[in-house]
Image (cartoon, rainbow, N blue to C red; front, top):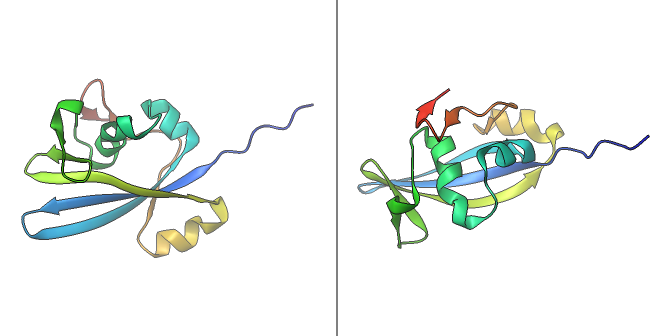
Length: 114
């Protein structure tokens, strides 16, 4: 009997600039989440940004400053990611990091939250 491949989890960090204000947000996605949203590499940053900000960001929203996209009147970018294990989830949640379940929260094709 083959062992099931263990799910990998990623702590993703997003940057947001609105006027003079800058923010960093963190969220945990699984390999399954990334596959479901069609994320393969940095060319698909707009997909993971759409998923986090619940707003349909497209490749035409690309802005050349630090691999950033326009989102409404804000600049946003997928800043960084690190592998994390499920045993770290509770600690990260206490620090204000959100952990995603198996379902995605945004349907990019429809451009709306699920």
